[in-house]
Image (cartoon, rainbow, N blue to C red; front, side, top):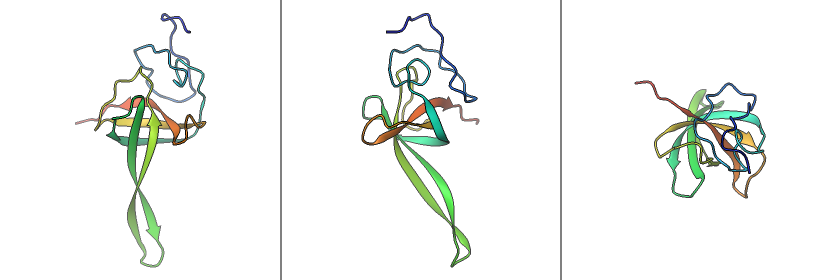
Length: 116
């Protein structure tokens, strides 16, 4: 187990470090989980499962036949370390990592503050 006085480690991305300290092995800041690959910003759709979120984001896809764009939605399961306090409706930044379970291959790296 890690010492509670230890600070968060640098994961190589430009994100705001979490203020709380956790002892989760799958935390990219306080555990040993490396992040790699794609980084997305999405909306939390569901937060019912412990340490797991469902995050959704929209993207546009060009349809060559009609020469127009269609809106498509991507929805993934994401691991949420306990050092983040996230609820449904929050905007989060998500990074790809190694598979944590059968359905989770992404982890939360930052809670995005929405400007009003």
